[in-house]
Length: 258
Image (cartoon, rainbow, N blue to C red; front, side, top):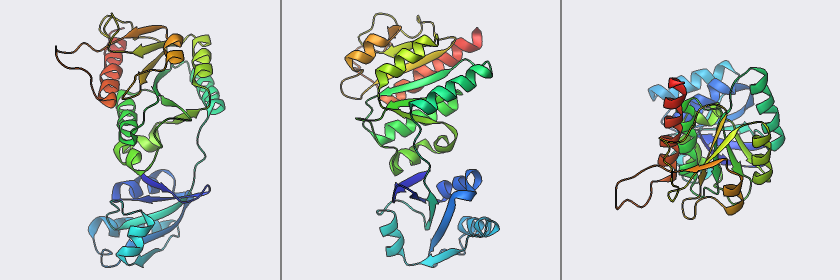
């Protein structure tokens, strides 16, 4: 879902897939809609207009420059809606989320991104979490990529399916995860063991560091184990979202065997 923040209480969502997703998941939060003049008969947009009308929302015709301004010249594909904003989830929400998993006897399967600065990497990692059947993504509130339109576009359906928790104190959250007997496995290219030699079954949180400098020192110290993805000689590193996907699916493989 592509979203541009408008205010603390409202946000702009644009693009055909994003708007369709918003209608499917949160129709009660949609406040207004606009369609670029002349695009009303486009097959997919016409379908969206009809779906909006079911919920009492009339899509207003607007000039392209108006829509461009609304979306900061994003790839809106001729359709824009305004919605009530969803407050960001924090560490208190995370504690409740983990309690719910425990009540359902589900072993937590989490991805932690420590200092990821590229919104597209954040979105791609969330999409991998969704595909791997993991539960959530945790990021530090500060010094991390915003979940902006670029992130939501890359995340695709994961934007509404995978909870994103932005926590004030990541080190404290890692302590809480350890207290819950959740293994914290950090990824570092300089590690001795590879992911194929590391136990990724059971309650698990995989930690990926920033694109430039990896995990912060305190984050690394909180990890149960440090591991790496073995790579061919001469290859320095992988894109962080690619590395996250590889680690997640190695965990999926091991869990399926166990």
